Length: 146
Image 1 (cartoon, rainbow, N blue to C red):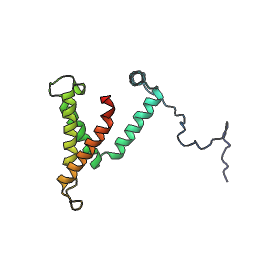
Image 2: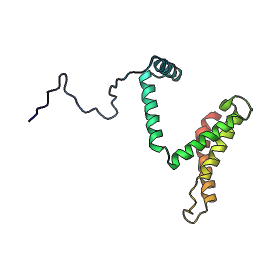
Image 3: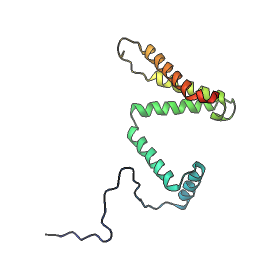
Image 4: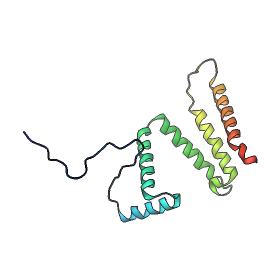
């Protein structure tokens, strides 16, 4: 019968919820320099930036090929299309931003399920969602008027 060797060092323990645990890996100098720049531009540490990018990659992997992926891709395309209008500086231009918001809402409406959910039509549901969004925007931006 084989016996396992006792591990040297401090005994391992389960991390507490929300606790960060160390990871170690090697990257090319070019990738390290790029991560340094991205982290500095975002006001985060390299470790925070690596964690953020890994979480994004795992989300992409999870939804790739699903309806969520198709919707997200179409929204990204709609936003990108809005920045190529020639009306200023990308999404920093209010007209482009408004167009990007509008295009995104249209994409979401396009993907609304075909089956009638209840007594309401697809159009009624979509318009109700837009009204709820309008109310939430009013609440969010109400502080801007002070």
